[in-house]
Image 1 (cartoon, rainbow, N blue to C red):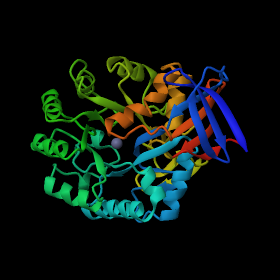
Image 2 (image 1 turned 180 degrees about the horizontal axis):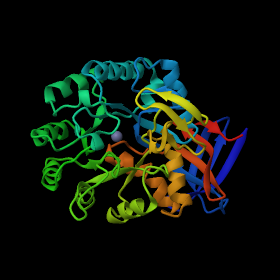
Image 3 (image 1 turned 90 degrees about the horizontal axis):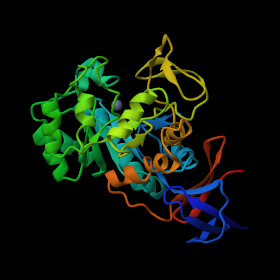
Image 4 (image 1 turned 180 degrees about the vertical axis):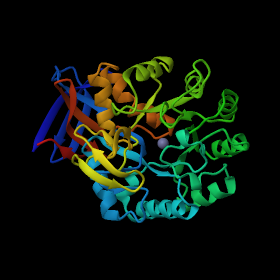
Length: 377
Ligand SMILES: [Zn+2]
């Protein structure tokens, strides 16, 4: 069956004609034809921080191949064609086992390796201060240790491309310099670092802030604090969890304005993303409640969030539908911006067709390597 889509590039605004026959892209060309005003084309999405999805947890060993492939299929339906499984603070043994597990899955399956464009190691070299460490196990948090990191990197098959650390440790600068020399993006997060420590980290090559506004103490100095210090530093690109629950709209507005929209959207999703509402058991939060719309909270105290349970597409929709960003910017913050940060080429054979219905993005078709892998019924 031959299908032809006349759509608008959601970032460049160009008119594009895509012809698909038997699920293969025959052509994708700029056109002068009138486009279907409600149909858009955008580059594939990249999520730099994902702890799990649809019932599969990347921080529980072992991760089975069929489960990982289930995650891939569920993410692909939402246009997310590459992602960074995120391994958080744990015992050295467990971190090594999880990294080896992910590396093995990539080596065994070409499908898996085509989706995993890197691993994000979030910890264990973060702040031990409880309000900053959040759900990370305090007993395993430690000062940066390059030799230990080399063991982690070897276990991962050199797939760790982002590490979240706190620059408050005495040897942070030396550690950051080694990471940067080895092409690893250093992201500042889960921290109580001073302004001077943040500046020193950036001077050493740190270039990103992990989920800015979360993983930080509840109370900060009104004029001088680690959020302002990171916002004001033009060499830091922050990631934000725009799930509608982790950050108030005014905070998002300030971050987007201060950074001139040089911001990266991440889902930071737990395994509960993509699951039906209900009460579940979480290995870090105990009993948790998942509500319709993706709000995840502690069962005994629903004021306390228990992580994120939305997808990257939900985050784009949140920013777009609440008019915090226009469509072009919202989509690029989850596609071209994260790709630039980790040096992943924007492949023109990977793209997404979508429409806007009631101010929400609805995926129509997903193309990977020139093949249509999902189409809306
Ligand atoms: Zn975190």
